[in-house]
Amino acid sequence: MAGHSKWANIQHRKGRQDAARSKLFSKLAKEITVAAKMGDPDPDKNPRLRLAVKEAKANSVPKDVITRAINKSQAGEGDDYVEIRYEGYGPGGVAVIVEALTDNRNRTASNVRSIFGKNGGNLGETGSVSFMFDRKGQILYPAAAGDDDAVMEAAIEAGAEDVESSEEGHVIWTEATDLAEVSNGLEEALGEAESTKLVWKPQTDTPVDLDAARTLFKLIAALEDDDDVQSVTANFDVTDEIMAELDA
Image 1: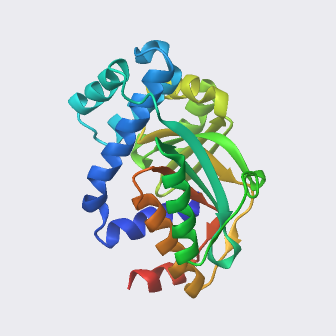
Image 2: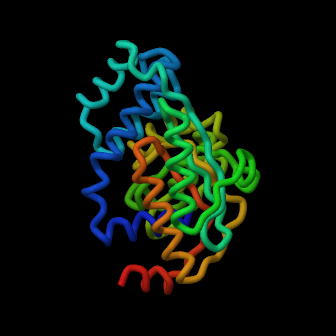
């Protein structure tokens, strides 16, 4: 999604990447623990765990951290975690989906509601915005993985649904249930991906002006900074000109 690519870029350029690294590792490790607890602790026998480990490796999470996260599931940790999805609207009418893993529903709900309220948003009911998104598998490869035709051919052979190629790289889309299988096929043809995960893909994007974008990015940053929040998806569309102003 273009919006998410731009959001990642502005985070990087403003120097927040290093500060967020430890928090990212923690969230990826939590997903590994929960995935291992909900199924087999062997990634080869547990598709969700296999994807979680693959995503962790793609983000340079050390092997010992991954191993500890799996071992925690067998030691009883992660028993109390529940998955919760929050939905609402951000500045400019942008639809926002927040996914969390928490051991305290009241704490997380209170935090998320407060963050929405303090940053120009409104938390809605479950289902209030998710109908505007499709649940899809998303696999990212750098441009160096191959030219457009080679990546398209590999994606079709692996059973992918669609491919979007640009100078920044290749975004390969799959049905949610096909992500693990397509990912394995692509890995044989193109090598290890930069990212492999389930996402909410907007059906349409919502254009936002400078003021709305500025407040929206504060909302997203605050949500992502919460320890219980695993992912934040928003259907915003920000022009390059506005992005340049925000980055100035």
